[in-house]
Length: 72
Image (cartoon, rainbow, N blue to C red):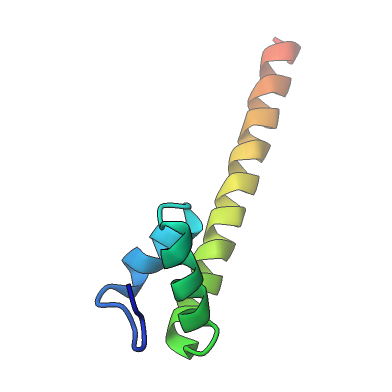
């Protein structure tokens, strides 16, 4: 797989990369691409930030639910 230009579906490529669904070779190829592609780099950063924020929000909800159960 070569990404000399942006993948046909950059969002899908970014998602697959961040979720570990690319083969090691595909991941390296995508890394080489996004490091020189502002469009893919921006999408990667945005999606990664979204995933981290989602994990943090889910953790806060779990802690809140646990506290509510203990208080009941």
